Image (cartoon, rainbow, N blue to C red; front, top):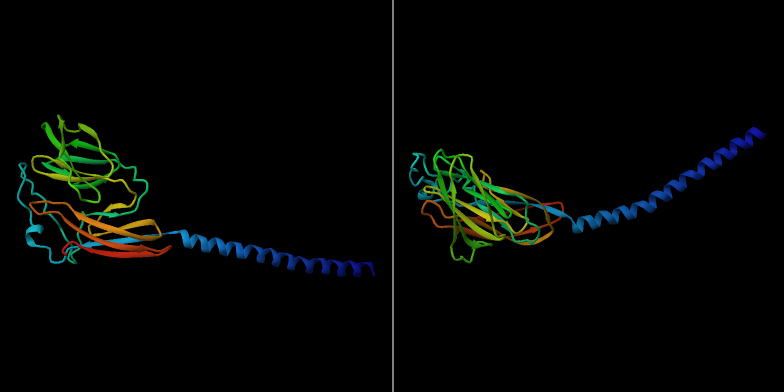
Length: 250
């Protein structure tokens, strides 16, 4: 008899543990669901921007000649077969902390490379030339690519290959670097979502806060061709990919 009572008591005590577990889960589930809803409402999304210039004129796609070193000068644009345009500045008009990155521009074979870059508050100018070289740094405008400034120029002398000079830049300003045969364009970014289109004419911006934002694409003037600008709006939703196409030909 004692054994049977022990078995009954054990069975009863075991059956009571299941409702306790169930109640515990029920208390946790609404809390987790609310947290997930909050994360969705205040989360981030990604933005894919495509910049195109349909039927780009042949003159813009043609090299304007050769440098003193005999190297061909780059064309104003090098569109893809679907008219995507690389090397275009793209900016979301969204305030925040600018990227902590310092760009380098190098002179080699009479050409500056890269010819388009964005940076924080500093720019390193470097020589790869065997002979003494000179660059001129001009502050030419303000973001978002408007309101020309009085040309504030600084001349930088680079005596030997490997020599470099670090120039301090004003955040939110647009700069032009000139050598004898080449030009590079630099943006001192003052906001977090700034990029340059890749070879396919597209760029992906990740972890953008939800909201609707103006977006601007700017192609610098090159090879006698004027600058081109395109603007639009993109709406970001949490966890999704927003896509926008900007046409420089309009």
